[in-house]
Image 1 (cartoon, one colour):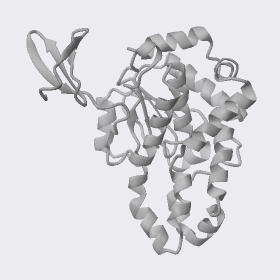
Image 2 (tube, rainbow, N blue to C red):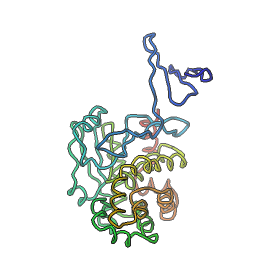
Image 3 (tube, one colour):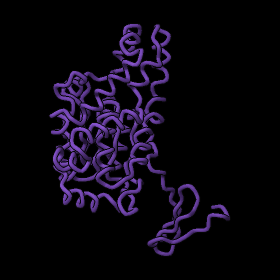
Image 4 (cartoon, rainbow, N blue to C red):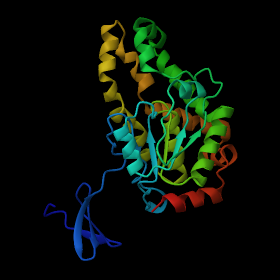
Amino acid sequence: MSPNSAPRRTSGVWTTNGPAISIHIWGGDNFVMEQPAPGAPIDLPTLANLRDLGGWTGADGAPVISGALYRSTKLAGIDEADTDQLVDRKVQTVIDLRTKVERDAEPDPEVPGAANVFLDVLQGSAMAASADLRDLLKHPREVTSALGDGKAVEFMSVAYREIVVLPSALKAYRGFFDVIDQASEPVLFHCTTGKDRTGWGAALIFTVLGVSRDQIVHEYLLTNDQLLPRFKKSFEAFELAGGDPAVLRPVLGVDRAYLQNSFDTVDKEFGSMDRYLHEGLGMTAERQQRFRERFLA
């Protein structure tokens, strides 16, 4: 602790002006505990883009509680050691937002003690095909042609509109809140790469909890730091095979314009976020208040 970061006491917890340190007083003994910054990655070798939704500032300055809501990529491929990490975190419910085709191709393994719920956001959509990197690598020149000249961004723009207006999306995100309302905590939700359908789910949770739009966008963009580095070798292989790796980034990463497109679609199609939450997803003012009471400290 630096001399310039003298502790201050808040509700029985000593905090400092330093980066992320708190000292809890239990039974007269001091225990120094590091508090990770909001959005800090949970680094599991076989489960990418995993992070806790806790720590961001919500309504009335109250923080979102930690250890209750998690987001990630698909669980297919997770090894036993990383599964044990989810068990240690006492994950009780896993929500899979993928299509049936995606689930059948790469099913989630069972997480001991956790219930599995399937909510197909893109059912019947022409955009439902997953951006599977293994498939992209098989035809690098064709993919470069198909996604180049801004076509990848156009593809993503359509996808981010559809996750708002598709009947299957409205049904899935309504079910998303229904499941969280009724589920035991903690809840982990994911799609394939944990960025688009999952990113919108996280944005909706944060919106209900009163998290600012700037924080929502910041949390969403963390995927570029926490997911894209895992694709480095694949990008290099794609280039060696004759493809342009620049065309992959718009599909495998995120951009604030994508998320803004979803917010703009909400305003255009529903008039406001409040109407979308209430009329589209069934999140009445009373439900939103209960949600805040449950997930804000």
